[in-house]
Structure formats: C-alpha cells, structure tokens
Length: 458
Image (cartoon, rainbow, N blue to C red; front, side, top):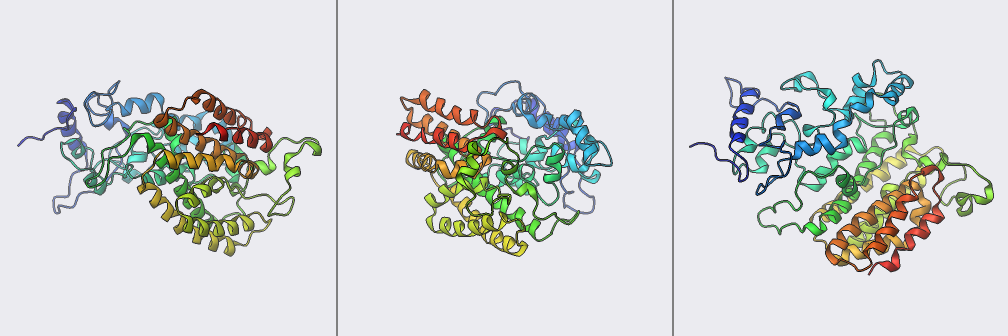
C-alpha cells in the first residue's frame, strides 16, 4: 500500500519525503538500530509543499509557510550576520578570541546551527543562522517519516525531535541561549565587550518572533482542547516559572564552580542588576535610588538582579500558596546573599538548589491548569497593586512587568472586548516608552504609570 499524506499536503510532498529518506544516513547492514540523528540544515524544510509555501495553506493542519516566515520575518535567521558586523568583530578583538566571531565556537553556539562535524548529515551554511533544527532537533531520523499521514508526534520525539508542543520543554529550549547553560552563556566579560544583557519572556518573545505555529494546537487524547484566547497566559506564566528554575540552576553551577572551560568568577556580575551601577548620574537630590535607600544590602554593594522573580512571585502565590510561600523564603535567602559584596558560595548554592524543585512544581501546575478571565484579571491587578516594589527592584523587573501586563491584557481583551480598550493599550504603551532608555529609567515615574492602569481593569 502506498504512503498516504496528511490532509492539506499536496502530492509533491510524497516525492520530497522519498527524496529526504534517500539523503538520510542509512541503517547499518548488521543491525536494525538506526544511526543517531544528525543535523541536515534548513534547506530540507524549504519545499513549497512542506514548510516553504509563500502563504498559509487552507485546510492544512499546519500553516506550511513556516520556512518562509522564518527566513523573511524571524530575527533568528539573521543571528549569524551580527557576528560579522562591526560590533561582532570588535567584540572578538576585545575578548581576544583566536578567530573572528563568525568562526568562534563561543559565538556560534547560539548564533548558528553549530554542531560537531560527525553530527552533520550533510553540509549546510553557518550563515543560515538559528534555523529549524536549533529548536526542533536534528532531523535526519524523522524528516521523511513525519510527512506521512497519521504519523504521531510522539514517534518523531522518540527519533530526536524536540517536543516544542510541551510549553515547559519549549521554554527550556529557548533558554539554552536566552539564559544560558554551562556550555554556552553570556557573562559580564562578554557584556563589557558589547554583547546585550540577556532577558526573556516566552509569550512576548514568541509574538515578536513571530509565531509560525497554530494556536491552539490539537489536543491530546483525553484532554480538553486548548483555548486559544488564554494560550498566551499559559505561555507567560509557565515561561516565567521555567525561567526562574533555569536561573537558580545557573546560580548553583556558578556558585559550585561546575563549569567545564574555566573556574567561574565569583560573584559573576551578570547575575547582578546592571542598572544599579550603569545609570545616568545627577544631583543627589534628584536620585530616586538614594531617596528609596538600599533595603536588604549595604549601600554600595551591587544588588542581585531579581527581575526573574519580582513579578512571577505574585503569580506563584496566587495559584499555589504553599509552594509560593516556601519559594519566597528560598528566594529571600538568595537575594540577601547575592546582594552582598562577597556572597557565600555554599549559602547561595543551597538556597538556589532548594528553589529549583519548587519552581518546577509551579511550572507543571501552570502548564496543566485552565485559564480564564478571572485568573487573568486578578494577575493584572496584583501586578499593578505591587507597582512600587517592582519598579524599585530595577529596570529589568519593570521590563518584566510591562511585558506581563501586555501579554495578559492581550488575552483578556480578546475574550472580554472591554469598552476602554484604547485607553488601556495607550497606558501600557507608556510603560514601554519609559523603558526605551534604560540608563535614565525612573522607578517613581514607572510606578505611577503602572498604578494608573489599575482602575482601568474591570
């Protein structure tokens, strides 16, 4: 019997699938065990009958224009290009790299589909940037089979595809570069050389990407279909929990000197609040920082960057009071210790390590729970009610609050269609305007703008 196709995929897809199978590594003649999955480059996804259509295909389970969206609109496709520009070349000189940034493994790890030669099933260009297999995994084993009708997603995952349908796994994949791992990271040395500081919020970053997948996805057997109106709320909340867990894991391995390439500088300054030191200077009478004081730390000691917790803690306590309270205790220890001039490595590692399973438990709950108008409204209200604490945490915390309110309100407005929609959106835009020049960020002004949104929410 011939292979049947998915509904909405044209006959040429069968020809492409057969071609893909011919190009993939063959099984050993002496065993039925397939070769390990290898990377084969984005060109394998580019056929118009697969993911390279110029516009969405009607009646298809997927858009089929995912490759076109990536190459035309997604900044990931231009990630390699920044390495070869003036700033990239200057960074390479400052960091005293042995090669240009465009050839340096330290840079390619996040700016390209970088893999060892033995992991490549065929030649492809590093200049393609961050492409399909960076997120979806090496495709040699599943590329052909996944085009056939009734081929389950689970089989592709078993053959090496990353399970991006799972919001926790998807966030983990994003954070490999947008937060870092032991093998690829951005530290204070790289920031001083010109690399941007890293921050992340899953829903906002997905929207800007832009998304090339359908929302909602098809539901799993026995589970209710995902409500498209609230998918962004789920992504925001779960993404926040996974991001915090990743940050705590990073603190642990840095505190314990577990990196493979060199001993970690301690404290690693990229864990601290950049803008506590890097901000515009003016007369003391005009300093909002000095007006508020330095609670929890000695004046002059750099503050820990609490942005990955400053907003999320409100959600954690709202949906899981017990774990939320316990997480608060662990995070207070982390914050107090990391805001000392010489943090105790063991104390930081122990507190951060204890926070990891709590954040994971909350992430799992957020990924599985149902969202609605009431949950979303309460979360927006809690963020606006806590405006001052968030604002004085630092500019990055304010940034997280602005992205959170934006994501939550988009979902809320889509469902409720409020009469004052234009007024609320205008007020949210003011928040982002205050973040355009981080060095001149003013916490008092941001808090006023955030509180102003509270009476508009109903």
